[in-house]
Length: 600
Image (tube, rainbow, N blue to C red; front, side):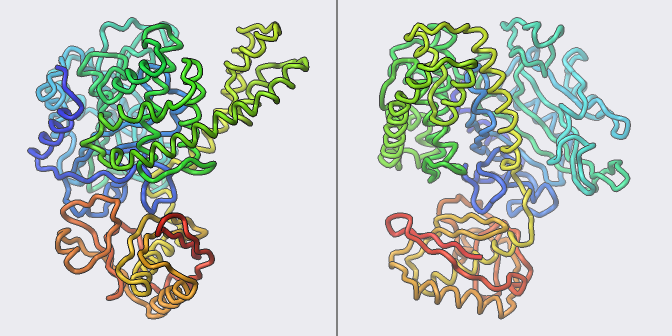
C-alpha cells in the first residue's frame, strides 16, 4: 500500500480518535520555557509531567504528531535511514488501557488500516533480568494476535526498557520506567551484511529491518533497595516515526524515497545536475543536502537565526555543511534558496509558517551562505602556507582546518594532489576517521547534557524565575498597554530572559515601573494555583497566551492571585513570597518593535 504523508496523518488521527483519543497540539521545535533542551527531541517531551502523574487538560487518552530534531545524528546523515528532523506519531494512555488494548490496536493499525503484510512484521519484547520478570503478557498477546514464534524476539534492558535514566541499574530511587515492545518491518530484498554479526535479527544494523513503532509500558518504580515495584497507575507511551512508516509502506529500505524527502532530493539533482544513483558519494551528498535543508528550514521558521551558540549554532552548522557538500557536486551558490520551494510545497498545509516566512528565510539563508563562502576563500592563504611546509600528519592538519575554519578535508586532499604532494589516501582516511571519532565521542558527551529533555531541570531557582515571568508579562501590560505580545522566553537557574513585542517604545522609566510592580506583587505573598478550563472560557476571563503556540480545547491556566492569568503547563512556586526580589539588569531592542529583558 503506497500512500502520501498527508493521507498517513489523516489515517492515524482518524484511528485514534475513534478509540476515544484527543489530539494534543504539537509544541514548537524550539521548546518554550524549557532550559534543559535546545530542541524538541521526542513526541512525549511535553507529556513527561503527565506520565509522571500530573493530569492532562484533555484527559487520559491522547495522540499527536510531533516535529522533532536530534542534533546528535548530524554526522550519521548520509546513509539510507538517518535524519536530523523527523516527525513522531504517538498515542498515550494515562492510567486507562494497558498492554492488551495497546498491542492489539497497534497491530490493527499496521496490518488493517495501513495493510502492511503480516509476514514482513516482527516484534521484540523484554526478556527479563534477575529482578524484573520476562514480559510474558506481551508475548501472550502477540501470539494471540497471530504472530509466529520465529517473529518474536527477546532482548534485555539495553533494547527493550525505557526510563529517563536509561537501564534499570542506572535509575535513581523513585524513578518510573518500564518494558517496551517494538514492531519492525523486514525489507526482504536486503541481504544481511555479515560485518554486523553472523545472524540477522530485528535490532541488527545491516538495514534489513526497520523499527516502525515502539510501545512503552511504564509500570515500575525504582525502590531504595534497588528493586522495582509495580506502579498503581500504569501508562502507555507509543511512538512511530512518520518517515519510517512511509518507507515501509513503499517497501523501500532507502528512507529518502518517501514523499517528505524525495522532492528535496530531486530539487538537489536539478541544482547539481547530478543523479541520485550516479555513485555512492553523490547519493550520500544528495541525502545530506535534503536532510539538512529540511531541518534548517523548520528550525529557522521557528524563529532561530544562525549564530555560534545554542539553537543558532546547529542552524549554522547545517547550512555550512550544505555549502561544503554542495561544492562537491559543483553547486557554487544559492543552495538553500534553491531548495526552499520544494520544502514549502511538501509542508504547505502542515507547517504554513514556512511559506509565510519565505522572504525572511531566503534572506537569512543567502546571507549565511555568502558569509561562509567568504570563509572558504579566506582560508586559501592559510591552506597554501600549510601545504608549503612538510607535515607528519596531513589528516591532523586537515581536521584542524576543518574545526577552525570549516575547510572541507576533501578539498584539502585535492589541494595536496594539485601540488603533487604524495598522500596515502587509505592511511589519510583511516587517520582522519580516528581523529574525528575521538572528537565525536567528546562532543556527544557534552551534547548529551544539553539534550536530556523533559523535566531534567527542576531546580528551585528555575521554578521561581518561571513564575516571575508571569508577573513580568502582566506588569508590561500594566505599564505599556495592550499592544504587548510575548515572543518567547528562556529560563535558567542563573537568570530569566523574556522577549516581547510592543507597539509603544519602552524606556528606562517604563522598565523601572514594571520592576516595582513585580516586587510589590512578590511582597503581597500572592497564592499561585491552576485551573483546567475550556480554551474559550480561558480567553473570556482574560488569560494571557503565547501567540506562537497551538493550544488544545482544554487548557491549564495558572493564576497568580487576582493579578495574573496565563496559559501554562508549569511548574510554579506555591506563593510569590518564594520568588524573592527581582531585578532587571539588562534591557535591549532585538528587532522591529521587539525587545528583550534579562532579570534575576
